[in-house]
Length: 167
Image (cartoon, rainbow, N blue to C red; front, top):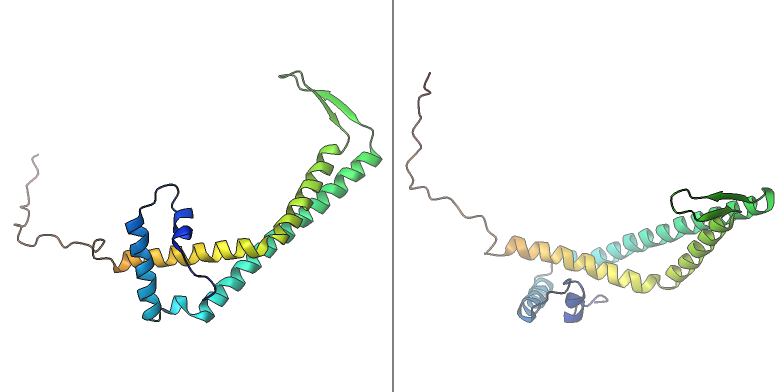
């Protein structure tokens, strides 16, 4: 299996509170589910989950890349077309010069971030797929758990008597 869940993965997703016996119990539950051939852990389902997650990651990268190119081109257009505008923030008395530099820096930072994210997309894919598998299996474990079963109310109680309203 490509996405083997380890105790380190569980500790990363525990938000600072991790108990070894809970992690060991969950890892044992995962092994039981593999033996029972859980359809969620099948190769086809994990491949589908991987493809959906990768498509989502790539669409986010492309969206922010296009936003970066548009912002950069708008900043260059303002820089070469209009004269710089000078203003002063009345509250802080801080001068503000608008000459297209802010959209240029925003566009460059978005483009650099997209290039970095594109280079790290495989690591992000592995992390996200493992997280989705862990979340789903925790839901399944909660459903199968004896502790979380709904307890029946005591049926030996007497029915409530109807009270007449006073007028």
